Image 1 (cartoon, rainbow, N blue to C red):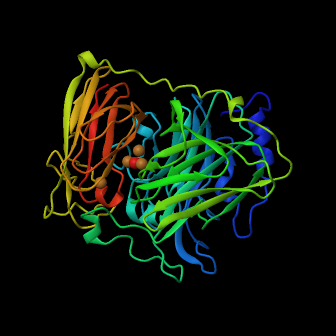
Image 2: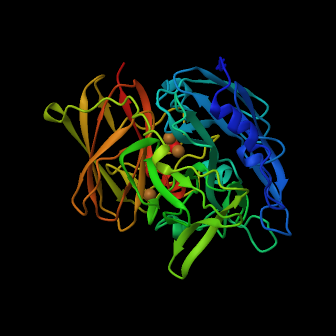
Length: 464
Ligand code: C2O
Ligand code: CU
Ligand code: CU
């Protein structure tokens, strides 16, 4: 059990964070802190998302509100008991964590689905610090659509000097004006870019306002847990820098203008709050019709007079550097394949269509008898994955259990980022590299969930 031997600055600050004022209607439950081993009760509930309405039949990882933020210590085992109180099977995946394959939460590939009223104990030992998230991998479109996306933070060994830490779980819901769910997708859209939501939220709230001490240093942890939307985000007001993407520190910070985040991706921003009481910083989604505010951060009290320069740089995660000179090249082609036979329904459901494929093979559904692995990798060897998108749509390609480095693209200059989810643009071929240092069968799929569920899924085997 991760126990802190002495009160750290972080603990003190998190303690004070619970006392922060938040505007009416916005609960703090989206940022509840779990400092020790925990239980997630996967539950149905009614909850107010659109002001003045109630959304029935939502799903959460808690019986009484939005999914809690899980906080782990790097390298220390953390047990999560998932108790399934839904009327259907589920399974929980920890997006971005390089953990043991048996804990990865993919039905049949790593464990049987958790049936109603059953429980499963996950033991997570995270080698990397950063911002992550968690979500089901069974009946995924509907379960995520109803609310099952939560944030997971792996703490740095040392706080680089932040006064506050604010996870922002960014996602849309598909709701009508009455606050009720509308269909989770449209087949026509699933065969193209995917079906967008109708209500944008942060931590399950529409345009929440967070009060934060004036002049203080805040670590904003953005995670796009949406099923579909590739968004461009801007932070307006205050002084700020993007310090990490997809859990990995950037060698050089970037300004938070035009941050492109696809489903599954994260950005950590170091923000220095304005000095004057009442001044606000706004997180905007860039839309063709103009910026759409998603959340506001309002300065309160006398200025703490901190400076971004006081922050220590983040420590890089211990990710093995691929040996490019001796790396084998593996080809993956992401294609359209309409008219294939629909995937098997099984316990974890199907949308009933096949539109997509990897290496010409469409995933045939979650079953005890899955298709063969797309590739078999030797332990400890380096590989270059050549990802070719022959479709006219963008696909955020996600690999479980391993972190890869972006090498090059035929379409644009790309920085050498470390990630688990890379946005592959239409017609783009991108090369990425990794060391196959985590054995197991690792799911490999598009994170537009409608694409994932209509064929654009497979897995890569790393031999033990
Ligand atoms: Cu976040 Cu298999 O995915
Ligand atoms: Cu994942
Ligand atoms: Cu896709």
